[in-house]
Length: 93
Image (cartoon, rainbow, N blue to C red):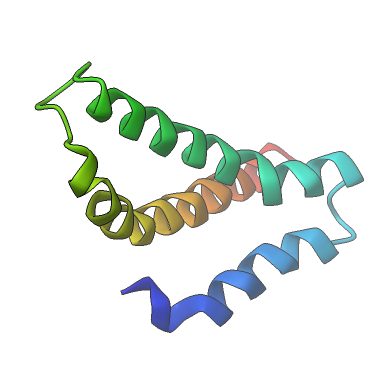
């Protein structure tokens, strides 16, 4: 469960932001870019499920449950995307 690791997630996103090795634009992208892309993908998934674009249509009364069950995975995906970006960036130098 992600809720036990909130402090670790926050520290993990603050470390690249405080880094002196990365340029300012790279710092901002590492903290906001990949998590923003993951969040956009999650919003797209919910939109598609609500409109029946893929899979069975998600009823309005089940939207809250779907969002509640999705957040731990969105946070994990955002953290993983940030880590992958930072690893890629470190190997490029």
